[in-house]
Every structure is written in structure tokens, then in C-alpha cells.
Length: 361
Ligand code: NAD
Ligand code: DAU
Image 1: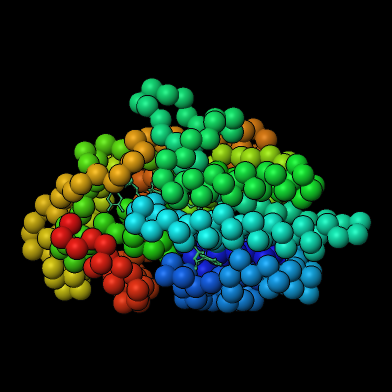
Image 2: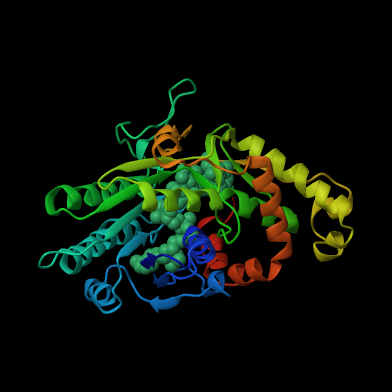
């Protein structure tokens, strides 16, 4: 296969390129990434790929890449991905997630369906947030759950899902879509719950819990998401969608308490951590949980997500391989061993953005 991976310098995209390199070393991989605040070339260090710095909204650029490089598969990760940012500034989400995805579809149609057409696949990476929010006893989201997005982020992803579907039904583009639950793991930008709280804990900064902290998410290690996408590419039916999840439904407070206990244990096991992170409570004999702070709830905050991944299990042979306990322990180790990576990220634009948007929280 000859892949174009959009957003390949972001969290999941970079993990996917690493995964694909290991599983399919003979395949070509071109990464197209605009290197927004969330994109980082360092995420791809040591990985074989061609890198193109550009925007998915540049239709002519994408047409050129598809034609000149003989690309047969697009795996489309590029997006604005953070719900809080979409609340503060929705425009970028419409621009990239809706218009950018449409531009990519137009380029794929022009190049792949010209003349008699040629074998191809457009795989769209989407989210479970398009289905909206569940009550405590509602059944988990499946592929026929009606769309009910509640944030500008999820609405923009829902719009992109519909465009992908329409390009299949109207023009015959060979598409698949996967809707996945909350990912965590290496290279996740420290604006999302787990890396933000880990890094705050190491610096003795408050852990800002939105509302009552009892919102439920279905946590999946990013490697399992990559395996799910790979299974869709190999065995998914064109025109279909697949839900990918971890079966690890947890309230935020449980995730946060797990994180606090794991940080305390890590400082006890490794005395060197106290010297590296002297402001952490655990360096001074106090529990990390002392940093827990309740703040105002996220506007429109979805209460619960849960994924019914039976279709992916039955039709694709997909099953997550890591429990949350295993995946979380590996993730904590990665962040403790890769301080240079997250310090580099924090030295960039993110720090300014937090100062502007979260002053006083
Ligand atoms: P991320 O924010 O870490 O990375 C996004 C990447 O896209 C960055 O490298 C960025 O530079 C790039 N990008 C943004 N705008 C671009 C543009 N116009 N042109 C080219 N590149 C652009 O996101 P992530 O968490 O890795 O998510 C990747 C995809 O997976 C997104 O589509 C997201 O909606 C979806 N998803 C994420 C999760 C999750 O838990 N993080 C779960 C389900 C689905
Ligand atoms: O469900 C899949 C989605 O998961 C993806 O589509 C999104 O791209 C991804 O960002 C994620 O969305 P969430 O909003 O669920 O993730 P986030 O890490 O921002 O928040 C997880 C939960 O933790 C959520 O209930 C909000 C809460 N939270 C988050 C932050 C950043 C807090 O309580 N405090 C915080 O500071």
C-alpha cells in the first residue's frame, strides 16, 4: 500500500505511522500535516516516512500528492481535536474538520475516480462524540445510533462524517469511517485530561476537575485504536462505519484517582523523581490527590460515552489488547521517561494559549 496520512504529526496520527512502519515496513507513507500547535515533527523521530508540510484544505497540493506519488490509501486524522478549544474558538474547527475534509474528498474524487478509476480507499478517522451524550442506563453507542453532537468539535466531526458518506453514495468513492472513544498514550498533547493532569501533578499545579467529575468516558490505549483502524483497512466493507472502543468505561474521578495513586507510587519507587520534580506533592511526602480542585463545568459537557464495538469484533476480528491498568502504567512510564518531549511542547504556543484562556481557573 502507498499511504497518505493526514495529521500524521499529531498524537494518534504519529502513533499510527509508527504502528504501520512496524507492521508493514515495505509500504510507502507520506505524512501531510500543517503543524498546528498540536503537530510536532519530533513525534515522528526515527520513523521512515516522507513529510509534506501543508494543509488538507489545499486541494491542488493534495491532488498533486495523490497523482505524483501513486497514493492508493488516505488515512485521514488531520483535525482540530480539543473540545475546550472548540468552545472558545469554533471557526478553526469548521475550517479544518468540515471544509478541510471536503477539500480532501474533492481531491480524492478528482484523482482516483478519473477515467475508469483506480483501486483506492479513503479512511476517515472520527469520534464517538458525534452520537452525543448517554444517560447512566442507556445502551452503548452502536453504528446505527442517531447523530446528536453537542459541541462545535463534535458537530464539525459529524459534518465531516456525513460528507464522507455522501461522497461514497453520490460519486462512488471507496470510503470507510471509524468512530473511536477517548484515546490515551505516548505523544498526546498535554491539553487532554491524562497528560495535562500528569504534568500538572509533577509540577505541583492544581488538577482542574470540571463539575462533579462523574462524567464517564470509554478509555482506549492509542495502540489499540491503531490496530482497529488497521483492521478496517484490511477487512472493512466499503461504505461502512465501525465503532472502536476499549470497553473501559470509567468516571473521570476514577481516572484521576488512579493517576494520583500511580504518581505517589512512582515517587516512592524512584527516589530520583523527587530531585527532578521538587514541586510535586509526592516529592514532599504529600499525596498527589491534594492537588484535586473542582472548577466550573465545561459548557454543554457530555455526561457519558460508551462504545458497543461488537461489529468491529465480529466482522474485523478487532479486540483491544490492553486493559486500562496496563495502558495507563505504560503511559505514565512514557511521560516520565520522555520529559524532553513534553517540555518542548510546553515551551511552544500552548503555554500562551493556557495563560489567555484559563487565567484565574
Ligand atoms: P491532534 O490534535 O493531536 O493532532 C491533529 C493533527 O492534525 C496535528 O498534527 C495537526 O498539526 C494536524 N492538522 C490540523 N489541522 C490541519 C490541516 N488543516 N491540515 C493538515 N494537518 C492539520 O489530534 P488527535 O488526538 O491525534 O486526533 C486525530 C484524529 O482522531 C482527529 O480527527 C480526531 O477527531 C480523532 N479522534 C481523536 C480521539 C482522541 O481521543 N484523541 C478519539 C477519537 C477520534
Ligand atoms: O471521545 C473521543 C474524544 O475524546 C475525541 O474525539 C476528542 O478529540 C478527545 O479530545 C476526547 O474528548 P474529551 O472531551 O472526552 O477529552 P478530554 O481529555 O478533553 O476530557 C476528558 C474528560 O475529562 C471530559 O469529561 C472533560 C474532563 N476534563 C478535561 C480536562 C482537559 C476535566 O475534568 N478537566 C480538564 O482539565
